[in-house]
Image (tube, rainbow, N blue to C red):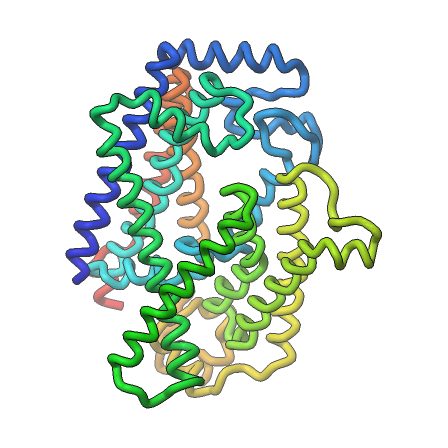
Length: 427
């Protein structure tokens, strides 16, 4: 049950964090310590000349312009897409802007809504502030110990296998395999359930017994494994895979977010958003299409990060226009459905006034302002915690202490803004 899942996830999280922290620690020790690591990185930057930026900087080099290129820094346009667009416009597993099954399942299993909100806050803190730094430190070690790799992704495993004591390699391998298998198993079960329940059972064979559907789900799982292996074989790098996933979901996040705030959003809104993102992404990546249209193999020029940012912005714009247009041109959901949804969810009144008038007896919810303040405080909390850990790792303790104070103030403010458990029960 849920307790089994909870303890399994907790064990895997602690094990994996212990492993990646150990890899980072042994890697930094192999260089001679943090001061020696920073000195070696500074020397590499000096040797590279003006074409390199500070690899330990927490922000991009804005002096190089919107699409300016430099070693060891993101172009500003790519940074802006990741920071200002990706959070609301992109759908990707585990971080759907409108709250997907991954997150909702954990919220619903909590004691009450306050505990559910706190669990999501902890997830974001652990996922975005705690987990990245062991990876970042190991990557910096790889830059020093193994420079100029044709496949930069190999750097992490080189540090892990060559600098970690042999006695720990078995535990390291077991931890990585456990993390990999837990993620893969989730995706395979999720995907096979879609294929069987939402497609096969609904459209192809409706009245078979359960053992039949179990066997079909096994075949669907095998199909997904083979399909995923084929896609992975065609990818040039690991980063290309997650970039494609992000691009395929670019622009769909808006509809998933606004469906809670606008009564006109319907099923066709979501369907049109998914189709528009898919078609636009395929079109932008079609070399034959652009050779026929413009006489070149791609619509955008620049480095891979710049092309990704431009493609994502284009896909987001097209998808958003399509789903908003489809929403306005198609009828809303049935009145009874909207009323049931309103009674159960009690969304913010602003975008649901026509339905609120039909309900009448429900006290309207008007907490958008407080939620926006909590959201802003949460963002500041996560970024402050993220940069605080980085400043401490790099020996900049005063800056780290200041960011820690900011993070704690934001955390206390969020806690005060959250209604107590008794208030949830009264509502």
